[in-house]
Length: 83
Length: 265
Image (spheres, rainbow over the protein chains, first blue to last red):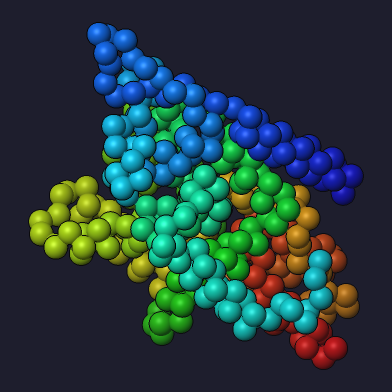
């Protein structure tokens, strides 16, 4: 039993580190809220930045795309999450 | 495992106070909200330093993006510490410890109620935000009592009061019900409603940090009475197994504090 536990613990510990590494390396396409002539401009933001956006609803999903609120990049524009 | 010298009820209370202040002391900005700390502390609080993993999971489910960073942090903390943060760091846990001291009628919740938190985690943190978006009225954040305490009420007061929308009234009603629950049932929120507890509970069985069983246990079962989460440590103590392997254990070490064998040593 303790051997099974040790193996499971090692697997989960490795998975946690792998998730953290994947999160540190991953980037996301985040599109601007307004489009010019129907073309949306996007930025690549890190997972770290997306987690921050998630804490104040700075990004929403529209048509399967991550859309950044216009005020999200302005520090003074950050506001409490509406939920 | 740590010797008994550092693990005392007073030390736990001091850590809880320091954590409450420390987690919510971002007066000058400079927050690190990309880092999820797996305790019930709402990141919408203006003074919060860190992100709440549940809030991040809700939004990521809405984005339909896998939350590598948040889940990695939660897993890492769970494997290293189990539910240690629930017992020692979580501000909601601290509030429950204080409110339970209010005298009056106390009840023991039926055993099946502990499963409610797993349903809440699966449905209101993952499934419904995934189906209807992170801003859905059916997400956990919409009725989270911690969010109500740390964000909804302060925002309402700072906004000058005024009429409340129905969803806010519902959130405040949930808060009132939870406060009543934790006054009459010890750590009732942890056992029944906490989604972080639900995520960490299975990891208790595997975690590196554990409560050391007592050598020479006399089966007096005083630890069962002392346990705030009714996880009955006595059978594990008798079998010299760590009582913290129980999913509901918040690793407060109150079982060891109550032990007459250890008091004699």
